[in-house]
Each structure stands twice: as structure tokens, then as C-alpha cells.
Image 1 (cartoon, rainbow, N blue to C red):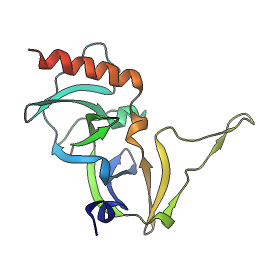
Image 2 (image 1 turned 180 degrees about the vertical axis):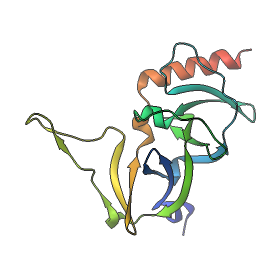
Image 3 (image 1 turned 30 degrees about the horizontal axis):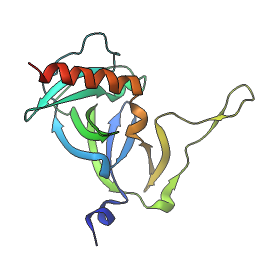
Image 4 (image 1 turned 90 degrees about the horizontal axis):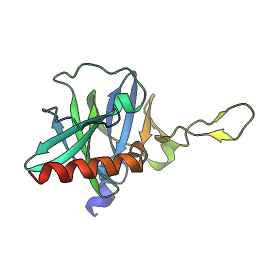
Length: 165
């Protein structure tokens, strides 16, 4: 069995607000403790800045703020999940890591749709599915949807500026 087959149904779950989210483990490079962040001027509030991870400059975003939740103070439970999104390495600041779980394909359901003013159904822009794990559910997020194209441009420029020094 290849590594990809072993990891196919595995998700890193993390807490944000009152909800638990899942991220396919194949996106995750590593999980690190929260560290000092250098701010990027004139960026969206959820783009917290840049970190230096073993000599590599990585932009980080706060998942709580991106999901329009109230920001909280970072604690010793705060982690940064290092992921690869659209060929750019990004850190996702999360409240705390819960666990790595296996969610079988038959336990993954489409997210609920909402009808607004009789219009077409609107899906949550970050959550692509709901994963059933025992008696609980995890909201499965797509890291590609967390970042907008203009965010990636801002981050790439900031990385270039900070690696030229």
C-alpha cells in the first residue's frame, strides 16, 4: 500500500470557534507551535504576516478571522498548520489541533445548501463537505478556497521583499 493510499481518508482536525474543521492530510506539510510573526503592511486583517521557518519565509493567515469569527489571543495551544496551496506554502493559524481522523468516503456528505430570497443554492465558500466521525461532524475545508488570488499575489510580493534583504 502506498503512502498516498494510507493517507487518502485521513484528515487533520482543528478547532475554530465552536466548530471542528478537517483538512485533508495530503495538504499538510507539518504542524508547528505559534511563533513570532512579521506583519505585512496593507494586507487583509486575516493575513497575519510572515514567519521564518528554518530559513524559508512563509505567509500565515488566521483561520478564525478568515472565517469571520471573533479573533482571540494566541495561547500555548495555538498552532500553525503549514500547507501547500496552489504551489505556495502557507501557514494556517488555528486555535488548537484536535486529532488526525479517518473519514471514509461514504461518511462524507455535501454541505447543506441555503436558499437566499428564492435564488439558487449557495454553498459555504470554505467548506466543501461534512465528515461524519462517530457521533460528531467535522466541516471539511478546502485550503485552495481559503486564499483569494489577490492574497496570493500580496503574499508572494511580501516573500520576495523579505528574502531580498
